[in-house]
Amino acid sequence: MDFRRSERGVFHAFALGLAAALALSAPVRAAENLDLYLEGVRAKYGLPALAAAVTRSGEIIAAGAVGKRAIGLDVPVTVEDRFHLGSDTKAFTATVAGTLVEEGKIKWTSTLGEVLGGKVKDMDPKLAAVTLEQLLSHTSGIPSDNEEIVGIYFNPVGFEKTTTALRLDALERWKTHAPEVPKTGSPFQYSNLGYIFAGAMLEEVSGKPWERLVEERIYAPLGLKSAGFGPQATFGKYDAPIGHMLDDKGNATPMAWGPSADIPPVVGPAGIGHMSVLDFARWGDWNAGQGKRGPHIVSPETLAVIHKPHVTTPPFKDPPPGTPSTGDYAFGWGVVKLDWTKTPVLTHNGSNSMNFAKILVEPASDMSVEALTNYPGQKAEAATTEVLKHLYGQFAPK
Figure 1 (cartoon, helix red, strand yellow):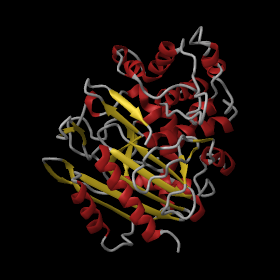
Figure 2: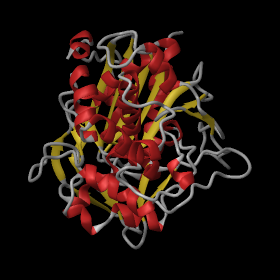
Figure 3: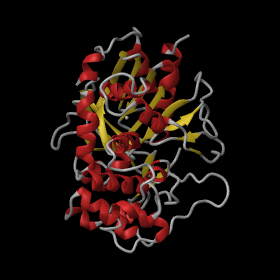
Figure 4: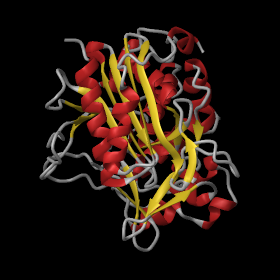
């Protein structure tokens, strides 16, 4: 899912991832011309950089990265470079929730009022009754990003509080709003704010910031050494692919560091993760293995709850070629049968309006495919979709 800047300079969201590292082999360029193929796609869509990987049964069987770290910068990307994940971060938040459910610190049915009512007083009763599972499946009645919600993200107190305090502050500012579930059709409403509230619940029951929970419970066990949060480049360096902002005429400007290089940190649980394509593939592979391959993060039974459909999404009018008109949503994952996959797959898009990430996981074949670029918008979406379709066709079991 994508955060977009409007003409007034705000973001709008719309609906359209050590033992494991050792278990996964070094990337094998099983397709002899993978980089050549990726370069063709990159050039076709005019992207600065493009990276992709494929996993099967615990191994990265293909990986490649082509292009430059930024427009106007003659530094080639590598498979070790960090790319931004955008809303593909949501699946990490859902998995952290699963770890805390297993520890008995929270339930899928725990409500905002039960967990946070002691710190955020006088919540609207209907908002207080919203459950963790509703937040993670976008069925809470909390709306998609609008002008008021964007004002919560871009709040001056962001310079005065910790991210944990900011998430509580976000709930404080929203607490008088009663959830509004559509009266007809699907209850699904893609809500970044809902994921922020879910993150606040996890922080409250664990006593730790969301960032530390993800680091300790997912990044470290999987050996995702490139993984982090926020802008992918180190401040003052071009040591990773730089995201690009498009103006109204389609001109691209590299956004290297500082507040303009990512969405505000308060949005973390909804979409500020970054990592290399190799580490993203390790995450995809762990999910493809359905929790039956190490390391233990959650049990296969808990991961099955995270992966299973919880709501059918509304019909998507006039979808792009290859995109289904409807599907299901799990916890942090879409669940759809594409016209070019054999079975329903777990999938998600992610963008902070400057980068684009796409992942596909097919548990039935123990396979995953990942594609990342440091460019936003329709060209990035089309390019990464083309890559996933091509690599799936090449590497899926016959």
